Length: 404
Image (cartoon, rainbow, N blue to C red; front, side):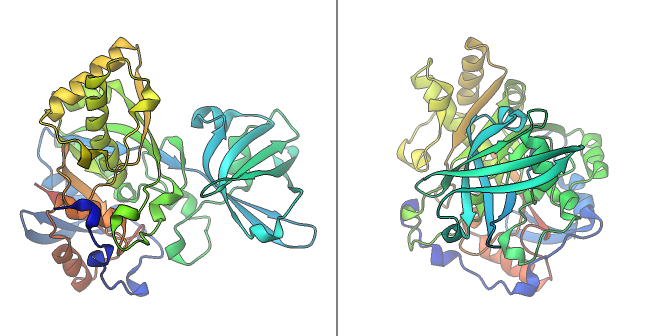
């Protein structure tokens, strides 16, 4: 199959608005679970997920945490301008960014930009008993966004505290509603830890402490990695062929211990969510780069969108991960920090992910292409079943378990 020439219109299906879950269930793990194994489809409740998983397997979760990335400023004229934080520019490191005091730069989307032709935007509020004035200054237009500088007049307050105080959680646009206070809890996974996403890794929203304990009781090992989900995850494919669609860059962090766990499990894993899939599959191609150039800089490990389709190789996933582990040891790195633009679509051969827990995705989306690649093109039967059996769709909807 020539993956580049896939027509995105072949991945369309009817999704009525009433089938999109606008809110989650009151009990996360009571959502419905579709089980797909070798073409057979059945259903259950999510709290029974552990009973379907193979004992002794390795399950990988994305522990990213959604930030309150929407900032609203009102001009003296009354015009409302929204600044949506996409990713940090200076400092570029997420952890450093949230600890900055007094100034930082972000790549942003700007709503109502025509009302912000010049000057600065200001907003005054209280943080932990301190009155703060936050100023936004427009620096320059970038290819797909804008560079904005934020400054504030109290060095005792971090940018993380500012976002926690006045930022708004960016729930998906297709929910067609305002963010509510409850979303601050329900739009985070129970295991979220590392701040940086502007969208939740939604397959993880079904897990509860009870389900995680049941997974442990099954003898399944759990590991975490971090991929910060960008707004690009909602970017529709507008081109007729996917060759013309540009994947967004996503930043990842994987501990060396996690890579070693993968090696111990024969380079095979159960992925929770498409973000975990993209990270795990990208590790394989990063390992190939290290095998070619043992002294490559970590930022050069970035996986390009079409790289997996351009370089046919018979290197095993196990050998690739071992090379990556040796690279981290040589450079005395406990964590791999890099990025990926990988697109996974029919024609792609999965390297590491054998089993997937995922939600039901939007029509004509790259996430639907990813699922189709795993089920060898059989996605439509899965989605037809879900539509016919009253499953709820998208971020707050039900889930699907794809087994080998």
